[in-house]
Image (cartoon, rainbow, N blue to C red):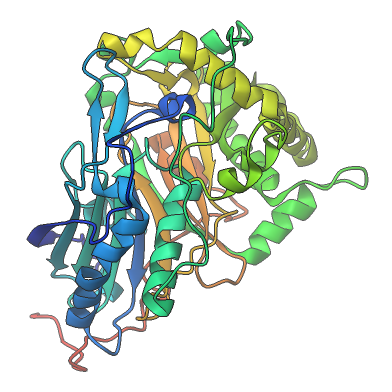
Length: 470
């Protein structure tokens, strides 16, 4: 049978408040300058589960019962993202207005879903929610009894580390009744700008105003296709071996990036002389403990990320051996893996906050979709999501974002919850780049079909294998 598109019908939306708000919590939580680097937009973490023995009603009941206590520990997520009336800078109103609990259903069985086409699967499971909401916890039941649990929040509140910490804390809270750690909610005081601000003038070239006049038009960005892939542990190991030399062993991310960079160069061909790769990387372990509280940073859910990027001639990428391309990727990433980089970003944003008063914001220029073709890699492979909150482990865990008018290609790389060393990738690609990936003779990127994700062997919850009407 042909794979199906997921059609989701929302059954209910309920506001849930923290049951025990922390005493003395500030009414308004200022965000840090690092939060403002990527700014305010909706992000999701989508986890998909096979049918639990207890049934979906038990899952929904457990979520309703646990969410008030969870919000008491993660109190900003019960608030609202608002703009300061005088400066226009976003901030979090911690007024316990409530997080949203969404219950929905999909008519398709997991085994029939077209997971390889992200627009027909993940995009439809990530239910849009109201601007300003700090958290939308979403449950979607499938016809087979399986379900999706999605964490929708604002990037202003969480980066990849924070986004994956939420379901891990949720699982621990529901399974044990408590938390072995406490989140650090203070933001602005953790990343204070220096006086006077000090940063390289080159930072100005890395950012651009997020304004319609400087971005690709909506019809151009709509031509990008969204695909989900699986990369086996054997292929990751093979790429790493091919990208390494006796003098230098490439990381797994560098090896995959080198292979992708060559695919990008093949897709660009003679249409442009140059192409770019960029990486969105977490900097927590690179911060100077003499300047930043290491324990607080570890428990901090907010943004500690930055972009690394490198532009190269198409011909050089195409003709260079894989280890040389991997070394280029490694050098670019290493260039931002330093504490001074993040201190400069804090200072740069302090000097450039005036844009918010005008109703604008900043974005990284490499992601805008102007200039030479660029592909941005977001690496989630360092983050493990436990996912079992009493109803089994998920078989798919994937971040999701709607990029708006940004026109660069992108790949988000996450580890498979199977724990077998394989990776799952969601990609936004130009059609020519998607064709290059599909035509790759090494077949590194395999379509993330329902069967490949482990959903092909699932039967309906009623135990009946339904025939088609035909």
